[in-house]
Length: 426
Image (cartoon, rainbow, N blue to C red; front, side):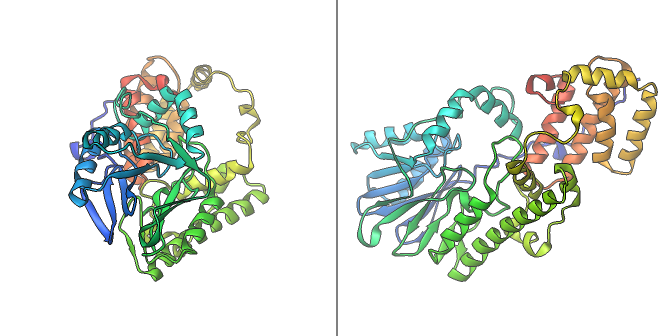
C-alpha cells in the first residue's frame, strides 16, 4: 500500500524569495561613488568622462528601476557599462541601457568586460538549454522560467589586468579579480580608496564548488582577496551584503577569508595524501570555528563542503574509487536490478522509516534509495519514492545553504510530478 504523504505547512513549502535581487534604489558610499541595487549590488562611479556602471541588471522592471534610480543621482551621460563577471543574468539588461542612452541623444556607452567573458558567453551559447534547466533547479523556478530571462550580450571591448577610466581625482580603475569566475573584475577608486569587490567579495562563504557549475580555483580566490587587501581600501562594497567600513575592518574580512580558503586547501591536500577519497574527507573534516564561525563565512548560499569537493576534484579525476562505477550500467537498469535483488522490500522501508523517525534524514535517504531509484509503480517502489520526496523536504530544513535547500525541494517536487528523469535527477 502506498504511503500517504502530507504536504508541509504553507510557510514551510513556500518557495525561496528571489535570492539575487537585493532591492531598489541607491546608496552613496563616497562622493561620486554609489551602490546601485538590482541583481546584486551594482555600482556607479561619476568620473570626469561620464558615468561608469558595473552591471546592467537582469532586464525588465529591475533594470528599469536601476536606470530610474541612477537618474535621481546624476544627469551625466553614461560613459561605460562594465560586466562584474560573465554569469548569465547580471547583464541581460544591456539593451535597455543602450536604448536609454539613445533616447537621451547620448553616444552609445562602452561595454567593457574582462577578456575571458566572450569565451564564457560562447560556452553558454552552446549549452543554453542546459543552463536554463540548471537555473530552474538551482533557483526553484518552473520549466521555461528562464527561457527569456537569460539573454547574453557581448562586450564591445575587453581588457586583461587593469583598465583606467577618467583622470585626476575622479579616475577609477577596473582590475581583474578572478574569484567566482575567471573573468570577474573589481573597481578601485585610488583617490578615495574605495573598493567595489564584485563577485570576489560577498557576505557569506565564497561560492566555490557549487553543485551545478564548473570548478573554481580556491587558491586563486585567496590570491585575489590578498591583492585587493594590498590596495589598503578604506571602504569595500560587496556584491551582496553591507559595506565594510574602515581600513581595519576591510583588512580583517579580506585576509580572514583568504586564510580560511588556504586552510581548506591545505587540509584537503593533507587528507588526500593520507589516501582518503572524497566521501571519506567529507566525513572526516572539521571546520574550525575561529575560521568559519564568523558572519561573513556563513553558508548562506554556498557551503564549506562544496569547497572541499572542488579542491578534491581539482587534484583527482571523476572516479569515486569504487571499481563498480568505472563502467556502470544504465541508471534504470541498476535501480531495477537492486530492487529485484531485495526480497524483503517492506523490511527496507521499515528500516528507512525507523531512521526517519529518529530524524536521521540523510541516512534514511541512503536506505530508501535502494528502492526509490527503481522504475515502475509496484506498491513498495511507489511508496519508497513518496517517502523520499517527504524526507528530502525534511532534509532541506536542516541545511543553511540556499542552493542545497532548493536542490532538495526541487528533487522532491520532481519525484511527485514524475519529471525527475527529464532533469537527470534520481
